Image (cartoon, rainbow, N blue to C red):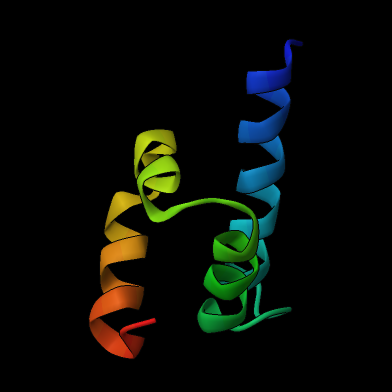
Length: 59
């Protein structure tokens, strides 16, 4: 597994934390945005989630 695949797998695990109720969707997005730029998350397939977060919280 190369680094890009590892990052994608880790992102999927983190996003799943909101789906299982461990973390709120807002906490997940805030955590991801602490590490990634919105464009990077969009390129990794999380564009809709980033847009929804930005529309809701404008951060």
